[in-house]
Amino acid sequence: MYIYYRFLSMLSSNKAIVGLLVIVNLSTTSLFSQKTSFPNTADGRKEVEIINSNSMSYMNTSIGEVRFLSGEVKIKHEKTYMECDSAIIYMNTKTVHAFGHVYINNNDSLDIYCDMAKYTGTDKLVSLFYHVVMLNGKLRLESPEVFYDLNTSIGNYYKTGIVINETTKITSKKGIYYSHSADVYFRDEVVVTDPKFKMTTDTLQYNTNRDLATFYSRTTIVGDNSTIYCYSGHYDTKKQLADFGTNTLIDTKTQQLFTDSLYYDRNNGIAKTYKFFVFKDLENKVNMTGTKAVYREENKYLFAWQRPLLVNFEEKDSIYIKADTIVSFAQDSSDKRFFYGYRNVKMFRKDLQAKCDSIYYSYIDSSFKMFYQPVLWSENMQITGDTIFLLTKDNKADELRVNGNGFITMQSTKSYFDQLKGNHIIGYLKNNSIETMNIEGNAESIYFVKDDTNNSLTGSNKSSCTRMKLFFLDKKVEKVKFMGKPDATFTPINKLTAELKTLKGYSWQDDIRPKSKEDL
Image (cartoon, rainbow, N blue to C red; front, top):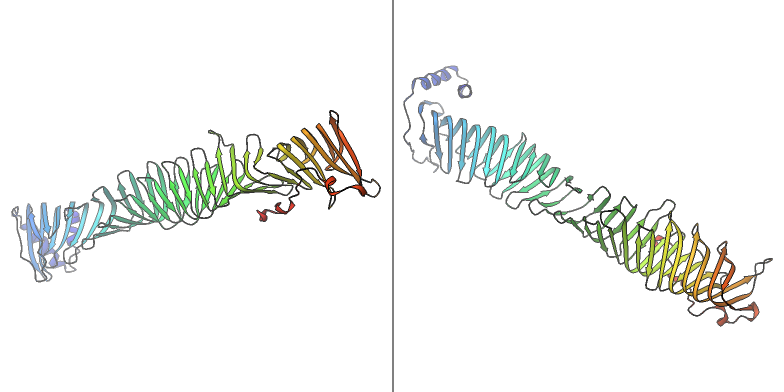
């Protein structure tokens, strides 16, 4: 009753009138449990209808008739129904002040609970105070204060609110609720809590019918296996489907995906990019850029197309690989990755370049495998064959294998090229330079001899054998060891013809060699 009488004290600054109101209220205690109805007013609106009250008192004032109700109060005005412990009704303005266990139902669709409320029938506004709870279908809104417009079905809160929609809970400092469209707009320190994720943002729109969240500012979504950072997008909290806009990042601790347009299926762990993206493998120190890609969290599978670029960061230099399509994935649960490049593959590192139709790289044995007309360059050396395998160790080339139609060309002078040929070639390297090389099966070689005094060419040695072993010094052939009986011929420089300068299959392809990473 304290709140009730305190509210009376705010009705007028005239103490005499206040005292009279209190006296009338205390002296009039007749039972008023029957239904009382009133005719429509001049503006066409119905009067406030008192359905039940255990006691009622009233008096006429300068602002019209005022009624005081207490005990099991039930009131109705048009489509709004109200229950409370006590109430004050201003009959002219159709204004109701309700106290204690307030319950309001509007149009049989919205249920409201609070400790105190003010209802204005002329403009259909409701002010709700203390432990406010609004229920509409599967939505529950809780707040210390809510201001609700029954005409537009729009509610506002400014002192922190909680919206619960089945398993999703949203808190914020400010909010606007649109009952007709089932949209809630949240502002300031918005937190969305769900069994599968937690979202924090500054501005959020949430549709309770579609379980759809729309965000317009920096947003963080934390799940079991990944964290998403973004600035705009939509998230279907029930189906776990989302699309994100500019400056989106998916972080799985060991992998990161940046993009300006992303579709994400959290249930299946699938992400799709439609604009520029950057993929970072932090464990293996690999980056990939491109336009379109599909990423699966399960095996960290990445399928990228539209000429993606892969960068393998190494201590002294990095390897750049570009292709029409690049596929990357991890083996089992390990973080050791594989990369495949398909169609129009180009590779560049300062001391190593390549071109082929398909390429494969494994972090397990640090090996490159190139297929379909591969060409590998290293300084003045060109290597071709059916397939080329390059094994690295400590980020340096360690072993070279050429299977099928192996051909190595080394530029001796501007117009003369040393050449090695065989069915299979195995080279062993140190500091990215070949030290020894084995040529097996139909081995052939041409290398040009230079005068030690003036470095001029004196002729060529052409030889063939079943197998050869070559020793290199300063990236040049120093010694040739033949396995079996060789067929060798020396031709002086003045007797060399065009046919004697090259082996069958010779093709110097420096014009297609990537000269820099920009050539990719």
